[in-house]
Image (cartoon, rainbow, N blue to C red; front, side, top):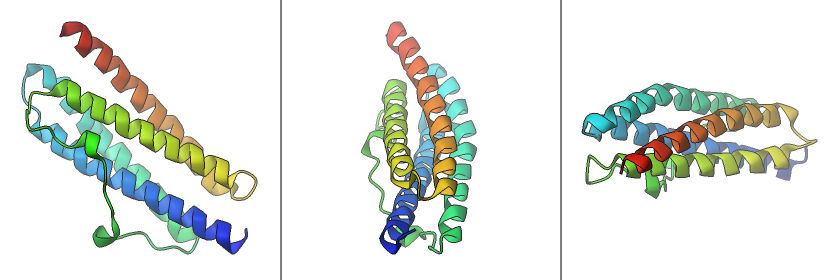
Length: 154
């Protein structure tokens, strides 16, 4: 793999790692902060997904290391996930659901880009991102189902 492609792959994986870590932080905050009877299922789902998203970050970190890169520490993480920030209104379950969907769509787009960039060049990274893409798509679909139900009740 040319050095330029190698460095681009590591940078893309570091960005994916950052996105996963930010999602963990926001899922954790929202799983604690949400209030109300209607929030319980969403809180449980977010709590369960924290482990999955952290696992994604661990897998990405391992791949970064295998490629000779360094996993970013907290001072190198640049967060920007505005839509998934815990809402001031702790009963805004629909806002959190929409935030999750937005974050998943961003992750999906990023993994799709890495898959395209590594095609024919780095099959290991491509395979990892295909696996992660599948899990992110499943999570997005689940939360889109939650959104349908919550909007129907409104």
